[in-house]
Length: 261
Image (tube, rainbow, N blue to C red):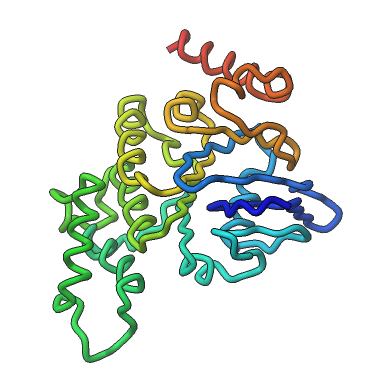
């Protein structure tokens, strides 16, 4: 067994629901600081894999390691406190709180603040300062006092990114971060993701191949619950098995859609 300590490592991870095996011996080893895109056809198990890594599901067998420490079977909040944070496809914001208040809520635990009825949030200078810094990072400082429910779709997604990084996690999971965005919004959002994840390890599930090839250092291809390839974008693009199983048809569909538009 390798003595290398990876930021995130999956060893022969399997997950079954009843008689249906969704993840079938997935192996993946992600180095610290790498940006990895997970791609694959619908039903390949991408969301299930994210749910296993983030603790929403426990694997049926195999193990998951975060910076060398085993995390499979632990509760999501325990995994989060060990340094892994995840955003979801569906917006998960406090819609009746302002942008600033959403971020401030997210930074409290990492700064050591616990519930205390005699404390006022407005008096927590470190939390307020950190929240302001994150607002600048995600380009929402001019929208700080707007209720989350009144944000545009792209702004809401940016706020979710801010909440995800607010706790200082070293490993970030983003689930289809650009879904539903226009081409110009997607371009800006890719740059935002690059900026806020500098020095962090990133895993993202994404269907847009332009996003995948523009953002990822490496691509993991998941087909029928197995990682059939894990390599640089150029190597994955040239992989005959990947082309046959997934990539060729997807690129053809996206090119046809671009011509039609």
